[in-house]
Length: 342
Ligand SMILES: NC(=O)c1ccc[n+]([C@@H]2O[C@H](COP(=O)([O-])OP(=O)(O)OC[C@H]3O[C@@H](n4cnc5c(N)ncnc54)[C@H](OP(=O)(O)O)[C@@H]3O)[C@@H](O)[C@H]2O)c1
Image (cartoon, rainbow, N blue to C red; front, side, top):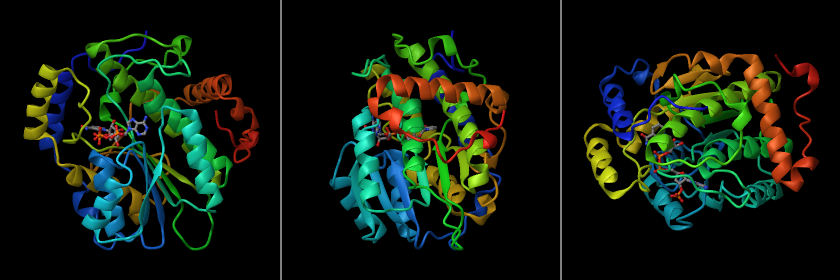
């Protein structure tokens, strides 16, 4: 049975204390000259927490920012414009728990003939109890994992993320993860996509387990897109004082809130390593790499097993086709059989 590293949310938060005081090796590598002028950047879940802070910073650094959100439209976008001093910011609706919404979002991008240079898959939830979606899956599995598989594949299949070889840097796809994935169990393919009930303790356990699943996908994408000159990167921002615990029961929310306000970083600070990974030349040729805040390191060893990546891809593709009639039309034409590794 699948399990994550923690089964107690207070212990999980206290693990963030170590991160808060840990040395940030490459901290001074993010320069003011790391700019995004002329680039288009999509950030999912950009109305809150880390995503919001990244939207402000990307806009300040010259990017055209598309905030892909399910709420606070257009207020959050107006705030980002004000804080960044840029008017190159817009919000597009995207609810990652609904397949139709993902399709509509991609259709909108396509109609505008956009080419996305930086895709930051940031949206995520930490739910205190299981919720079943209309499509039959559990919400945290879907939002934190499967929706990313669907969204990135749709963007690639529609030519929205492409290496234009026009002197610009390679497109980058960044998965926002959590170092709490380390030590989670191997992927439980027997239960893959099945609805499972959980409460608070299993909720935090699933949160870190789904990050391991997400990271395995990131590495599989990095293999499949290597020859397309697209960089796929994964990062844990460390502890962020965000709204992620908004759904926790009252007492737990108060306890975690106290820990968050003391030792979790402000979103603007936690966003810095992500901005570094998204823009710095240091990451131009580091497809498949991982940062834990400003520290390069390896993810859990299971993530790099090619058979696990292939199997995850096949299970995800099959599940997508089961729940979405439009998935059959998707041509995974950006990956030839020869290019598949494993
Ligand atoms: N906070 C931490 O300590 C920490 C540590 C490591 C990694 N992370 C990761 O950082 C990322 C950002 O989280 P955060 O801490 O900034 O939390 P947050 O403030 O709660 O932001 C989460 C964002 O995800 C969006 N979202 C949730 N469900 C969605 C859906 N169905 N469709 C579209 N958007 C959805 C939320 O939108 P709404 O406002 O509409 O709900 C919100 O914009 C997550 O992937 C999280 O796992 C956080």
